[in-house]
Image (cartoon, rainbow, N blue to C red):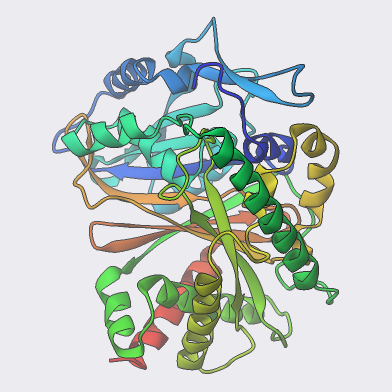
Amino acid sequence: MAGRQLSGLDVAFLCLEGETTPMHMGAVAIFSPEEEIAPARIATLLAERAARLPRLRRHASSTLLPPGGARWTEDPSFDAERHIQVRMLQGECDALASHAAQWIEEPLDLRRPPWQVQVVTGLSEGRFALLLKLHHSFTDGAGAFAVAAGLLDELPVTATIVAASEPRPRPRSPLAMVKDALSEAGENAGIASAMLRAARPYPVSPLAAPDSATRRLGFLRLDEADLRAIRCTQGGTTNDVLLAVLTGALRGWISDRGQRAARRPLRALIPVSTRARDGGTSANQLSGYLCELPVHMEDPVERLREIRRSMNASKAAGPLSGAGAIPVLAGRIPPQVHRLATRFAGQAAGLLFDTVITNVPLPKLDLSLDGAPLREVYPLVPLASRHAVGIAAATYRGFVHIGLQANGAAVADTGSLRDAVLKSAAELYERSV
């Protein structure tokens, strides 16, 4: 990664950075130690482990060639301890969510390696939390886990994950490069054409919001067994079921906010990892699908069936085509174009989608930090410009952990949305078993 050129997509995430649109991902991980922990010891342990990870010592530096480009370079004054903080709270999950919201809304200093960690103590039953913040130019969701794994207690599998996460050049012959260029040209034209067709000259979305620098966070868990039971009865994938639950929640939440019931579907951008297909050098190896969320439908089973149809159609077309493949197209655009046009394009995101819903893959491992077992982990997706809410999920230890990130100017608190998710899940479960 040292001296590695940032891809077009990596640069795009840098260009999208703004006071009201910080482009970092996040996670809130909660641990349950058997004995009282020493916060300073945890911070020291994290600093020692971070110092051993070369990628955490690097930041993006601008380049003259290509114009507008950037490279990852070693920070000569790197000190891991400057990226790690310790805070003490008194309270339950709501106090943690409130504190984490204030922490997550603060942009990262991109003159330094773009990451921060905070150890939060004082939770009930002796638990403590680890707050993690990584800039999206640095990695995608799958890569973020590899970074986090390097900070946790090492297992043979996690050591392999960390080692494999470093982007490496993919050797290609000149003939293969020509073939790839011709193939990409056709794919690019198809993606751009699909985006133009998918743009919606509709009235303002019920999830539209003025840009704001403040954030609200919410955390909740769904029983993975319940989602599987629904899937076994109704078909589809567990992710289809989760999308149906979230669709029902958004329908109820919109109504609870005093807005008229939507007369058309909402549309979600569903990021898709291409790491299994791409052995290239990009830190972000992403595509995406646009999924219609049928919030206008009253019946929860019919909503699930409609989502299955939408997702099946997207999967049949593949992750390198369709309007949802925005990250693929962004990765192939020259950096100087991103410097000129990406901020404007980000402002127009609402023409294509109303929210981002991502499912972060986690291995089925029992993870720990300084011997304290990891019990809960809530991922957080960056909030797109003029969006009211973004949703991220991760499955761990039999539960689907959901992190809600909301625009502070548009959403006073996330409690009603959390309740709506739980209600929607119960409703679909009752109709399925």
